[in-house]
Image (cartoon, rainbow, N blue to C red):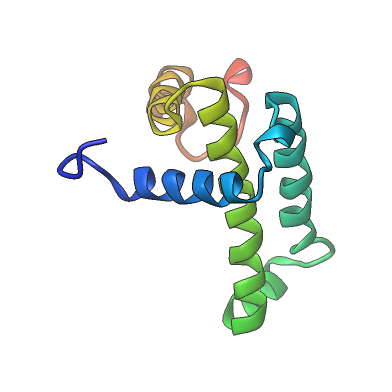
Length: 122
């Protein structure tokens, strides 16, 4: 990896992989296990707002400890997504950009603006 083209995401992936390697956890990080773990961590993220209304969620963001907890849960999901993409051999940033382009055709502005209908119901 050339430092002149290295991105913060590249550095993060290297950091995550080094962390995993130092603990000999790659043996547990099969694609199946990583996808399962991503879902579990997403559930923990969801739990941070369970039973809260929008005002309570806004108040939660104003509380440094609660906000830090939210950040940690988001980071767990993000790390597992990075490991999933790395293990499956694709660029997660490119995949996300490609998905935005797909969604641009599924949700044309003139049909989708201001409503939350699924593309098949537009």
